[in-house]
Length: 281
Image (cartoon, rainbow, N blue to C red; front, side, top):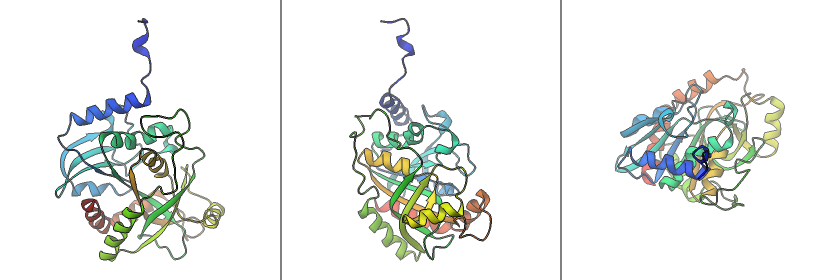
């Protein structure tokens, strides 16, 4: 054995297994559904009967978020009679993380045993008639982040080299979610999410381009996690909270403060329908 063999970097899959083992030693629960909470939406975690709450900084190979509105905790507990895992906040590509790090929590959840993953985000609306404070059920996405998150050596233990992306967002989950949104009389749209790298908000010209190629909302997350989840064969549902109208549509400069204010305004409604949806899975 080489004198330096202990310095060999762990493979991506070995890191995932190490993290899964760490989580399993922290909880007796075995959730099949997880929720990733986007900007300003972290308060949903208050709905959980918490068994354990683990800061990302304490989880092997997790990276803590640096953006306000993303507390950075893995919360495991009960939602009524259902075991649930909640990622309270996420890291973003624009923070300087490689996609391997951005995808890592999603991959850990999948290997741990999650089957249904609900991805939420705050987004800028651009579809005709869309208003801030409503929601958009993701039917598809356009990845404009400049790179595919699966670029590089394939992790064969997770999925195939060339995964099919013809239905990233599960139709059956979307139909179930829409039924609950209608029941709760929630204003919502169905549409395509454009994922951009950020951290700048888009220019009016870019927004017009995104509208022309079919996007209904734009944001700086979600697509990498959705691609990683689909690669693993998980069922994915995506929900955008339209926290502002995109540049050139909005009459005022865009700010992260506006995102937080709008998310706070619809917090009760968001928590109500998301709780029922997660319990139904």
